[in-house]
Length: 56
Image (cartoon, rainbow, N blue to C red; front, side):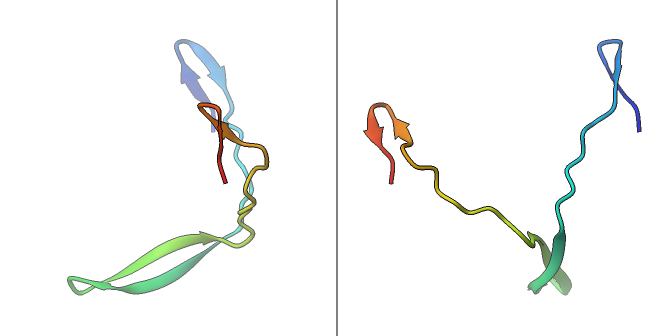
């Protein structure tokens, strides 16, 4: 797929993330689902500071 922004053509870079669909319940008679990444990176960055304070 080719996209155009302000007259410039470009091809979007798509990431290949494996996802799975999980049923989490029902809402007003319809099945409610969510998409979950199979290999989600959940590491907390070390040395992160916000306004001079270290975030844990």
